[in-house]
Length: 231
Ligand code: ADP
Ligand code: ADP
Image (cartoon, rainbow, N blue to C red; front, side, top):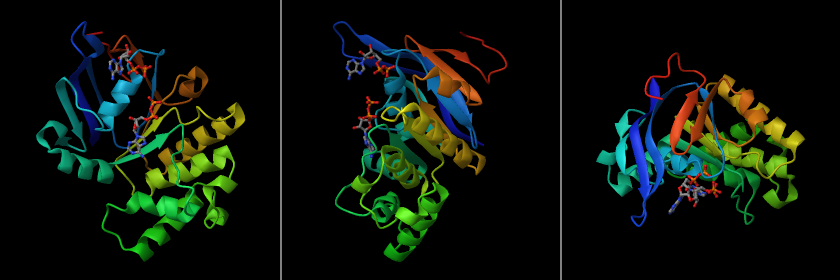
């Protein structure tokens, strides 16, 4: 099953002169894959992330998330699809300091219709999965950077979204802590999560089964593809 399909996606910013951030990007991601997206600064990775995450719409081309063509959806339905199908992990964690680790993770289920008790139970399970079962009642500020990123990852996966998008998830961590976060992403992937990770760390990317290399708004290499037509 394809959880993500991009077909000839372009993104152009402005008009004088236009900036062609993405120039005809096509690829599919199947359920259960672990993919890294690599490329130099300015190559289009963030633009691609925004489009994969439905935070932005392409100028041309088609994006299908879990089989749904996102162009056909109103902003409101798109927000619902995003809440249901996509878990986000960013380098800045984005945790609330005003509440506990458990509540931060439970917030990942706010749009799913689960009641408070169920949200808290599922959040507790997700915290166990990321190795923080004993930190549920802490404030995020009491945790280390690596632990905070684990909380953010628990929040991203608690609703078992079709796709987890991670944008430089190790960008704010030292290399040892970062390696442990990558190991966690591998474990979650082994447990069934589909993960797409943007990184400019070639060493981390080299460990992932599939690498998409972006250059000047194009995918110039796909390590999992059997052929490279059109490149
Ligand atoms: P990366 O994430 O690989 O660094 P980006 O997707 O951020 O690359 O940028 C790709 C290109 O698009 C760059 O030339 C960048 O300057 C341009 N760009 C990105 N966002 C905008 C924007 N909002 N307006 C105009 N140009 C943009
Ligand atoms: P960059 O990769 O350019 O540094 P960030 O990783 O900070 O950007 O965030 C990528 C985009 O996602 C930004 O436009 C940001 O506003 C948006 N964003 C950040 N946090 C969330 C969130 N929790 N849910 C949805 N969108 C978010």
